[in-house]
Image (tube, rainbow, N blue to C red; front, side, top):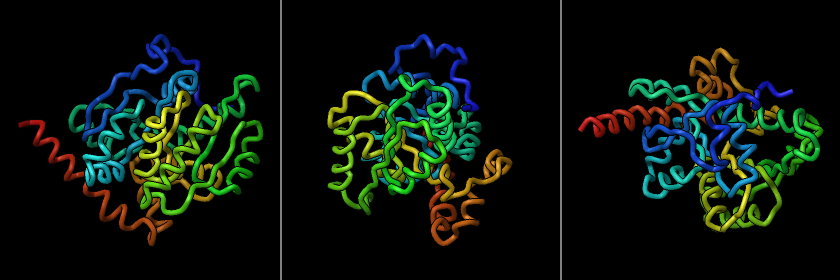
Length: 270
């Protein structure tokens, strides 16, 4: 049974399916003021509405977007929901007296799959397409969630470097049948594909840009202990496990978010 209570009542329940909830403008992003339970409910209800996508920015996303703002900021601001996937961003936002709920992509996907495996009847179960992992991941997901209506579509290599390959994936997603699309191909590739799907006139469904969420669920990567997550130290745990792959991201790129914050804060004061 899912740990997330999607029956919880809130003002969002009476809102149109694809109206945007309240948001705070921070670091160039429109962060949705919704918690995990509310985000899950919106996604499940949103499957019946027009196409939209959900982004889950963390510090690495912010730095990546500000390295190429003309192209990437519009992609993120076109998202239907933007939820904060970073204790560091929450702490910086608090300095501006902005309270951002924490909704990590991994927690959102775990809650979604648990809900669909345990809580939904067969007639209500959503069709889920996962883009990125190999076909072995599909077998592992079926083993863990035997009642899911889920399919995995492996992605071509080097999507980040080839716009034509991203377009190929976007077209394949438009043509397939799904209610929920999990894009697991990294930032900003997954966000560019999600945006492209809308431009290709996909009529319905919700796409979630969730990075390595599936790898965590099937055990290919291990998340930090909960106390480290709560303390904002998940990055240190991941760095310790994969230093050769992640040292540049966490020790060189991500600290730039402090400079971005200070610059936007000064500009805001002026």
